[in-house]
Length: 388
Image (cartoon, rainbow, N blue to C red; front, side, top):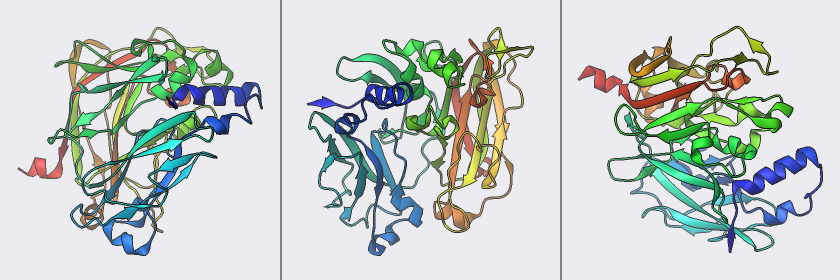
């Protein structure tokens, strides 16, 4: 049985924009995605730090794992998870059935209405913890947008914890770039792993021409980026600033970030209309520590339009300048802002993101095609580290 992939999403999005109703009747029959997941019932609330952690909304079609954060795995009961699926799809194990997650993830398989497409998801419950303190960018997964013919591939970065468990905490704009590519390899994408890092391999990000589709949508360039969070590919064409969903849960207070970089700006800086401007492109590296719920207990997410301006930001750090250099160069940035509330911290009430971009104004589709940023050996330091 076939497996769904991002190539189908590209067809749906492009046909929806250019041909209006070319596959309006067929698309739902091919889709086999989970769009939201939740645990419902007052008897389960005590297992979570806060009610917002009982729901996962706006799950992207590129997502493979759904992770709920709980207080303790030892006291986790058999628990029912419910799902919203794309129209006509079915899921196994049954939607809303109680399952034992105490021994690890459970695979749920979604089948399309026509029965021709399937997609597995790993669903798990995990205790809140610090995902990682050192990022060397040595771990990648090769993702094929055409999973049947194994064509058009890009890199997904991930981390591995001290127990050997994979941590899917990194995201990039690669799934969005995939909508404009057909037979490309990872080397053709905006974010990729390359050799000759400061130590071992590293992440390379480059600003590229977004092609005819990008120009038509007034999004003519695509900056290379890597960030802690999620990328929602469904928002790329019509609400691009909402495609980047920043933040992962954190149980420590960050103080500073260090690492190494190389940077070369592209030759011509252009605006969103591709008009050349007398300006030199700049790279960007920053981090944000923020509240993940508002005053009414509603979930807070940061996106491309408010990641540096949201009122729920507690602290942020940003490298003031990243001069062009062909040599590996040390950088350091310090978090500035308000003190964290330790009670809120103990209840899982803070998220953090760390962001790298080859064009500082890339979110506004301004930058220089060819700008390239390399980053390696990044380290996070926390309050208890600085007190030792």
